[in-house]
Length: 190
Image 1 (cartoon, rainbow, N blue to C red):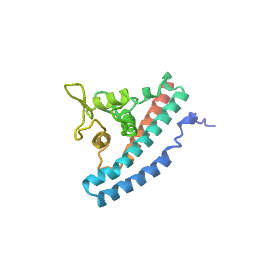
Image 2 (image 1 turned 90 degrees about the vertical axis):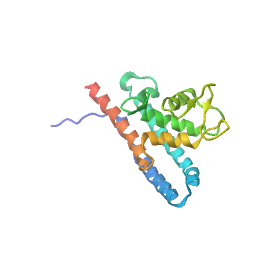
Image 3 (image 1 turned 135 degrees about the horizontal axis):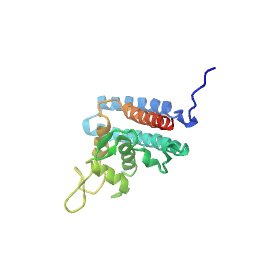
Image 4 (image 1 turned 135 degrees about the vertical axis):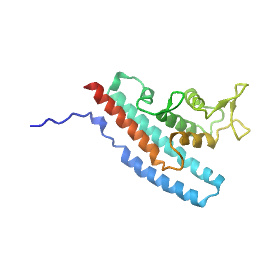
């Protein structure tokens, strides 16, 4: 008689397949825009798609962090503590998962003048997407008014996965992160 390995019920990834379907459609729309839009119009048309993709990933990441917390993995008590586990560092200690999360926050608040949550601001500053000038003001590259820019979102995504690649690669990064966190959990549990 063989014994079955026990797995935590939250380990099953019920969210991934629906997101994969969405991301494949997003890629189709982005490719269509590349063929049919002038350069400036392309960024206007795709900015919303990139933002929605990031929010979808943020939701996926945070739902998984909630699962990790509910399963009492590693005895951590806040979801952001999982962002660094098995996530590739981009720059200055900021990981891919953290940057995805904070780029989503950046997009969500892109119409709020001069407002960024301190953690989002710090993350974007640490990877070099936001610069502070000598007078301690935020330097925005192309706009005169103190408002958010498309460039930060696009450059941030490009730090995680080159824009020429399929955006499903972003989803794959989050899926791999999730799998590695679970793998570490079982390794430490033994």
